[in-house]
Length: 262
Image 1 (cartoon, rainbow, N blue to C red):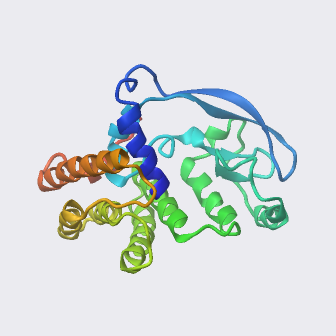
Image 2: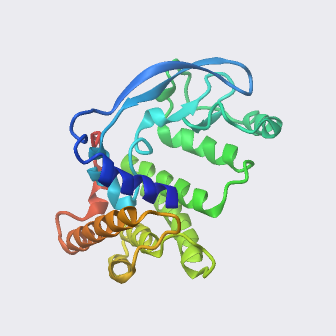
Image 3: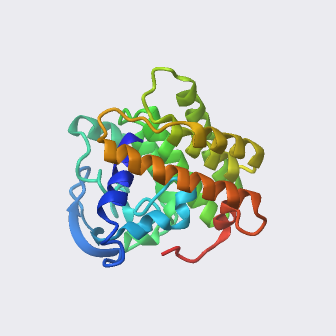
């Protein structure tokens, strides 16, 4: 969570003049599966700009490339499925256990290009793969938020809600934990977003008000990073409050659109 905030803060400071120069672009690259040595061609990021932070997914505190299908790799042979940044970096001592999990995995269709496999199907496989990798609560909170986002785009309300409730449960635990060092301002914002997308606007507005009066604090950040994060959050929080109170601009309405947001 803190890494995301630092990256967001850096983007405010560093990408302001560059944001409109680059587009989000991808290029193919060959990868070798660590499970079965199968050669796969996946897409890798070539360029992007700070405009990604203004896309509608910001209302769930999710940003490209988490919102884009090429980010989720799946091996065409054993069906190992991971985030793009993990595929060839899995711990070697976990490969045997992962292989056992994959033995029972079946995909819904034959495919030549990995993007042909529905993104939500890939996420379901990922949940099983990452279950043996010792990820912490912060990681799982974000994963369920990502899962809720993609099921929401798909129009599957039940599965989107189930994932978002899991995200919200983990956020409540973090907010109640006095030893947790995640910025509370961000936790309130994310909690508010999950409540809004679950239809609890009253609870969402309460969390956003708490976020608005909570100072952004993060150990190790430079003063200018803290100020950029504080100003950026307050601007986003006020916008969120206005949109929730509106009838036609509620962020959860984005769940049902089918076009790419970029």
